[in-house]
Amino acid sequence: MKKIDFSSSTVKVALIFALVLLFLIPISLIKSLIYDRKSYQREAIASITEPLGGQPEIQGMVIAVPYLHHEKIVNSKGETHIETETRYTIFAPDEYQANFSVAPYYLTRGIFKVPVFNGTIDLKASFGNFDYSFFNIAAKDVLEKDAVLILGFSNTKNLTSQPKLNINGTDLSLSPIKYDSISPFEASVYYQLTDISVGKKLSLTGTIEFQGGENIKIRPIASDNVITMESLWPSPSFSGGWLPKERDVSENGFTASWSIAGLSTVYPKSWLAEKEFYPESLTVSFIEPVNAYKKTERSVKYALLFLIIPFIALLISEIFSKIKIHPIQYCLIGFADVIFYLLLLSISEHISFDLTYLICAVCVSLSTLFYAAAIFRKLKWGGLLSGVQFISYIFLYGTLQAEDYALLIGSIGLFIVVVLLMFITRKIDWYELSQSVEQEKSGL
Image (cartoon, one colour):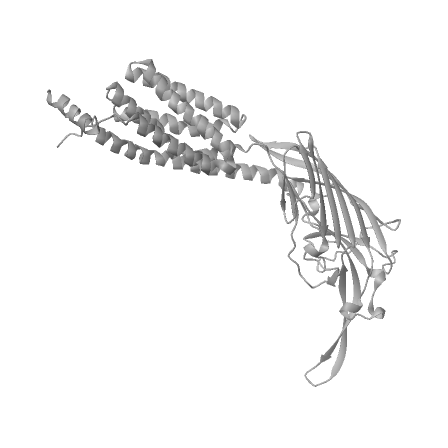
């Protein structure tokens, strides 16, 4: 059986290619590990936010006015009779103003921490023009005394106290009856309007105290919606169906305001209770300034490139130093580079990502420095290899920071690496190099 000559430059290139493919296996395992840790994080977040009601959505308010619906029924004998049932007409506010004041803080579960918050909403709304003629409802069939105000949420567990509401100077009382079959909201609080004259213009004021975690959703429902929010949180994210008209974000917190016309929502001025809608909401997220898992995941995506660079640098050092490097030594340097990503994942769970990255880059580069200096028997070759590796980590860090330009930076960096390799190896005669190896083996 013919013995493989690992000193051949052609075999070494093939070996590097094979090692790169081989190291994709532990890299894929690290990717799976990142996914598992993110799953544990999501479970921790759910266990913290669920008792608080999860991510709150303030879905608005409406007034539901009952009326008598008469329907002519013909039985099998051709006899006619009238059946009467109570149905509801829903009226949205003409104007709706919600001023949010949010105080976020962290709760932890194990090594994971989640931004949660307490908040207060100062509400103002007005209702008017209760017109039933569009639905062909006779005035005598309207039961205004049985009207109810419906306050909507995604989960009533988000409420930390009973919302206090007032209409035209009269404090509202909670209804002993739930009207879930007519509510346009996921979860509702109902108020009696027995002492309120629904036929005239109504002005509502109130206060809601709430809690939740991660983000707040707000659903505009009126003909004219004005929403403001202030908080000490320095890194909000605005998304959803509408972005703020004005915002001011600094390290001391943020303020934001929205002005949303009812024409841009799915809600009309009034509708029958049986009608369904699929509304949008605006979202304010209280995100963490640095997401270590996201950055680690992105860094692993570039692992293939940063495996190739140290191997090529090692091959070039071997050619110029004329010291033969065994495949096992290639493997050990490759393993050090793979362990970099594992260290990055594990340590960044406990300290900041930036400090973790610096520690891991320095440790792996130093290990390469001492190991390469030992196998080449000269410090300059160790310094060259560790320098190439450390510069690669600096380049990777810059790519991670510039998320929007990551593809551009990566493409330019790869091009620069290729150009440098062409420049460094421009005077190498690869055929002569192979012949010299053969001559050494034959003793010539």
